[in-house]
Length: 348
Image: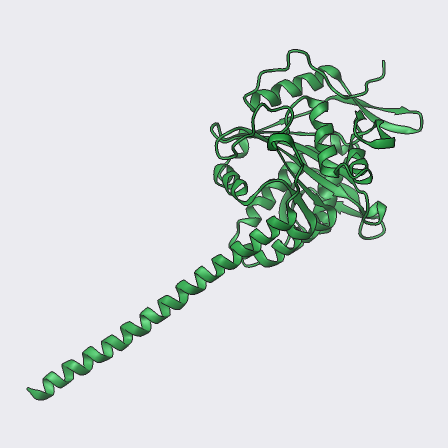
């Protein structure tokens, strides 16, 4: 009887020791997860803080808005800028890629239009350079005059299309390349073969063959930049950029990429500018992470290339500009402009 009680107590003590060990292990796992979450949050917050740009807008809104928008519930617009500085040795870059995106959280719909970078427009607030230029040079003059490169580029696009731009994200080419490489590359279904020069390797050609391909940072940059050759008609730059955004979005959310958050945050902090804060980024991710590709509408600004003096411009068609403006305003819940005005400089 005594031995039986002793055995039961010994078993109970052994069971308690195992429970303690299990609780200890669970606690360690929990702390590791929480610690990693804090690490992710800290790095993300640090990157966002380093990337923050104050556009110094009155009322913290576009002059085309009556009141500021709420990213959690209002349709908003975001200007995505790809900035190249390789031809200027890292200074006074140009907005090589400009994509205006509108997002409606209630309808779960997105509209996007690429602004041709050679569009002939009148640029204001550019000091001694105020006047007619290619639209991508607004970024340069905003930097040279200290008006603000992002601010002047945003205002110039707003006046071209007569729509408000609520938020923006600009990323340098180096940042683009480094982020793609850190993600381990992206998988793209290339619809038509073409080639583009590699700005990081003495302009050597990168050849893209039709079919599934895994692209590293330099290849991905060339993939989204190519614009001049005949293939651009049947396989547009806009379509390729949309393909990349979808592929990169899936890669960012993959399990493997989560453990690279420190590296990605370092790159974001150095190479990205934005006026989106942490809450707004969270709102957008929550609203649009499950959006289907069928919910994305792509608009095109029609026009023609024309050489004026010694400069090659893209001359947009007024009717096309107005149509794109009306559709963008509709996607933002705004009425069409009664009297459409634009800063596009269209020769008679």
